[in-house]
Length: 234
Image 1 (tube, helix red, strand yellow):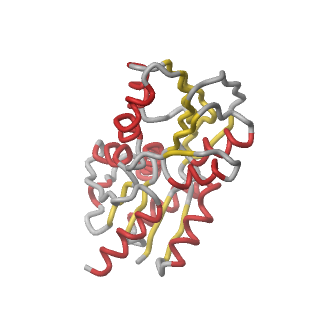
Image 2 (cartoon, helix red, strand yellow):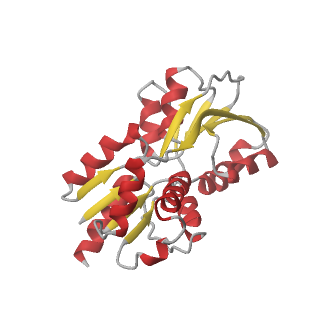
Image 3 (cartoon, helix red, strand yellow):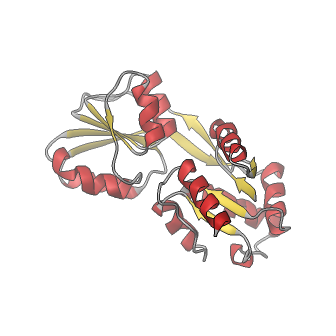
């Protein structure tokens, strides 16, 4: 099975190697890049960390305060390597975190560490706690020949599956699709290509473009691999 993913450069090698280890022919061309911001944080009872990039920045710069909640095992693992205890929601998305931790966070000071394009559902934490958001990094869409070339390859039938791991990656792909074909092609034309979203926010973004993606049970790259293997066996 030939697979294309579009993760940022810092995650590309790990993703491709993992896919290839499981027998898939995988390539990655980044559709976004990140730029780190200078941030100082207040003392807090809890810190919520939403991504692996946020985890790396916050640990390297000493930005974690109080008890730590992370979205996803890989994000948690990065933080645990620095000696912190970390808890994660049962599903690795913002909405599950909101519902599972809202009672515990009531009346607490909570620092939210994430990108400038985070899921707005976490703003709802401010309904019952003293929430303060800190933007650790900004996300920029990449638009160049490398991105346009893989879009052309997708529409030439070179891939069996496309993996989208964030809403902004969807936006980046769609921007390059428009650049490549001047708005004359649509994702809905890819009837024979599997489109996989790593979690609900990414799936919702794809649906806005008329795509009904597959979503793994586990919102990680490992979950995507398990889904692909299950589809191969079917």
